[in-house]
Length: 544
Image 1 (cartoon, rainbow, N blue to C red):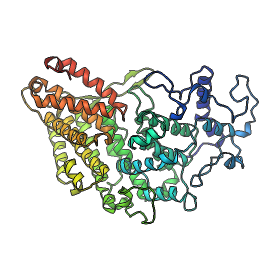
Image 2 (image 1 turned 135 degrees about the horizontal axis):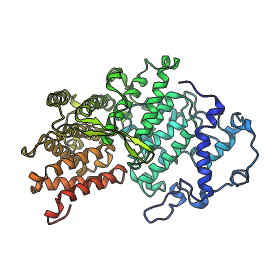
Image 3 (image 1 turned 90 degrees about the vertical axis):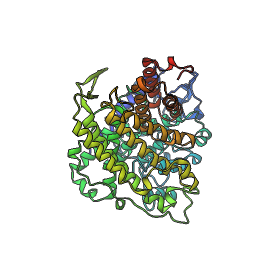
Image 4 (image 1 turned 60 degrees about the horizontal axis):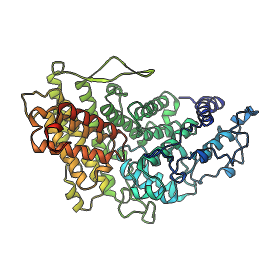
């Protein structure tokens, strides 16, 4: 994919964003102003802008925000300013500010804090959270290069992209310990995620990054974002951009630089996995056609496995992925997840059919609609089930199910425990989806119910060990699928104490997860509406 001319690049997305923000400010509706649950603006210390701080122009030309048009020197959009590094310093391990950004652009980004790094006390916990809880699901970076680059802090060995760095920090906000969030002045986990997402998105909107592969990596990490079912720029939006960027690289001579690299292979498989997981979560068609995906399956040799230098105290923690060779060799979990995502595609193809685009405002949205029992090919269902069972039977030892309490007794890292449990949660979720339409009212319990029960049991174990909060957002869909299976079987099982207990447990875990993942809000609404519709709570002494 060839880059547009510098001047055009400087005036495309960036121009539209500036217009949007300036108009919003003129009407007192700065988009980054956020309110807390009481309706008051969050304090500036919480890294959101009060009406006053948002319009602080002390470092900007006095006429910058006035309604009177100011004379513009056109070449400033494209000319590199030799003194900008001194005026807007970044740590030396970052690439310098792009020459395509005008002084006005940079000052705007400074005001919006898009080029402001997290505090030192927050930076390292976020990096640890990324290494332990994001990278295993999306292994798109060379972790050793990442740590070396940040640790050395001199930029001699290599430099990194500010956009990619901020995307890394954003993705880690969902899993960093809350004590660090609170100490950094944020009121909630959602507040810090929103803040870092806003900053990262601004850098993207201003065409901050010109390296297409780095851009694809950052976009993939931005696909962790979810705001509401009606949001246009959700995870699927950013994933589409990442895939399109990679496809653009493949269509040019740049592909020769990446085709044989381990990183290239992992990035494409990360796109594939995220595509399947988002499709399963949103019931929207898969972006990547399985028949057109010709990247060999991941294997251990595709991962950089080596121990962190014994003299390196960064990131400082007693037991991390970077310091334990055996943990790194459990890249088998990432490989098993990739293999399972292949089966997700098979289940969606057997279980769902695309429907006529639905109107959603000014857009049309194509959705996947479940096939009825009479539309399903029983042989296809049995074939997919057989492949799923084969996947489970061939799991490496490190991926086999182990109760969390036993894993704790061996001092196993929480990130490894959660990833292993998520593999099995996802496996049973897929089984429940596969068999849901095949359930018969005369059949009790159904295969879908059995699979849903296993999801609930695993989630309950994680919840009891205070680990459910570390599950990825896809787990919300798994819990919702489990809950819906209970509701579907209510004619036979709603009076059984165990089924009611599982329903309550699922709702309790969803309540906890809503502190981390916004999608849990809507899962709870759907769950309660379904429960109310079938009247489960009305027949019990204590409502669900």
